[in-house]
Amino acid sequence: MKTAVQKALEHALAALGMEIPAHIEIGSPKDESMGDLATPVAMSLAKTLKRKPRDIAEDIVRRIPKDGIFEKIEVAGAGFINFTFSSAFLSSSLKTLLKEKAGFLRSDIGKGRKVQIEFVSANPTGPLHLGHGRGAAVGGALSNLLSAAGWSVEREYYINDAGRQARLLGESVFARYKELLGIEYPFPEDGYRGQYVVSIAEAAKGEAGSRYKDAGFEEAGDFFTDFAVGMMLKVIKEDLQAFGIRFDTWRSERGLYENGEVAAALDYLKAKGHLYEEEGALWFKATAFGDEKDRVVRKSNGEHTYFASDIAYHKKKIDSGFDELIDIWGADHHGYIRRLEAVIEALGYDRKKLRVFLIQMVSLMRGGTAVQMSKRAGEFVTLREVMEEVGADITKFIFLTRRPDSHLEFDLEAAKAASSENPVYYIQYANARIHSIFVHAREKGMDLAHPEDADFSILSSPEETRLIKKLLSYPMAFEAAARAHEPHRITFYLQELATFFHQFYNKHRVVTDDEGLTLARLSLCEAVRTVLKDGLEILGVTAPDRM
RNA sequence: GCGCCUGUAGCUCAGUGGAUAGAGCAUCGGCCUCCGGAGCCGAGGGUCGGAGGUUCGAAUCCUCUCAGGCGCGCCA
Image (cartoon, rainbow, N blue to C red; front, side):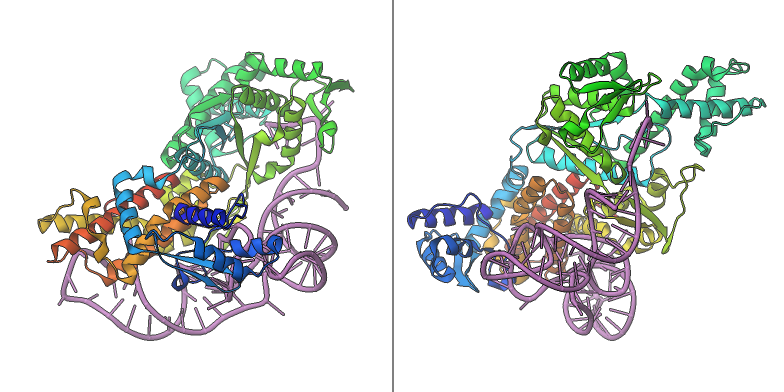
């Protein structure tokens, strides 16, 4: 649709001898009675041409070729040009949609560019909580969206299995293990206190028996840390699978140390003169690249900071040939962006290669009151619990109907209680309804072998025309969402499409004695189903035939 | 104190610098002889936090300001 208008405008502008702007604004008019698509291009040209916008618009309209695509082209308001498509154009476009499916719906704007999207990456020191779920839903949908739009996408989970936090989990488990054996052992001060730590300890006891009964943590640390991290990782993977999110690669932080990549990256920076030693620690000159202060990469006790492995990690990503890197982080990490950009520049790369998307906090409510969570006491509501209580589809959809950078209030009661009027059901219901229409049609002996052969010109009611136009605008919505890297736009499109479908359904019977009309309407339903499924698939939400 | 995010209908939230700012929920009133009523139709509800500015045009961009959240460690 948009392409047709774009071409017409370019043709007219060229005929007028005007320069064609790099970007021609094309959008929906204020009111659908005004037309299907509109452009304010005459208004933006008015200034440079020093002419009245309406006059320019009239000139443009006069030069648009009359080839049957448009039923009406009008100049309106201060100088808008409104286009209304002809029914012949709508019919033939709908046929193309039905015949080509994804080929019509999606466009290759990514052009095979390699992008890596790193998301969730929660420390394997506890189960995933709801905030991780938001990151998972957004990261998963963004991956699907870019992949559908022609990017070559790799989904990566970075495992922080090195460093103090992993050891701390190991020691927490060790303490619980001793407790199970009836031995006094001081629980680490900042240790992990959740019930899951006890479960891991029980499993560790099952494996090691009383082998570490008399051992200290120096001796038993490796076993307990490895065991605990391994088990946590398994739980995290199961949770993500249940949530319907998959990853292509799982990158271990510890692996970066073992392969010498951290040392190599630091040596590289040192050779470039971006590191210096002070008070026994090794510092990165972040201030030379726009950060507020210099950052420690190796502490005076010889341990590396998390930042050190992150340097190696991002160097590795860029070196493996990605055109674009996307990191999806919790908003509480925003202070970290500057130093990472600084180091990317220090390594000699373009800092624009990295885009960090921040996912804002999720506050969990139950019936209007905040659910208290204390990480310290190990009390927090996990993603698994929420999934079991309200379901994976609803949970994902709630995350995907908001911009990721807005704070989110997740009310468990509202998510459940409103379930029958939940937007995700509204969309899924449209799909299920279409399924049962087809079941009914088949019982009546009608089947739809070639939907693209139907005669759509007989579908001329306002409800049908609106529905067809909405279907044909999917590529526009899809492309805009992909360009902006904003999967949540798809959810709003799908809600509107479902609305138009329900309106159509309530007004018109699909299966009737009129065979031609039945075939045309069945074909229209088939097109709606195709688009609904495509959109839901991108969101990672299921499209059941029955609910 | 400095930095990032947010502020739009009673509530939860949409809104590529464009025409009279939208949706769902909630409230009120209608619609099932017939393909799924998890649906449809209608009504009410707004100083887009506030003040300036930029321009043909601002919820959107800039400055200031108020409010909430988060972050400013040789933590991750």
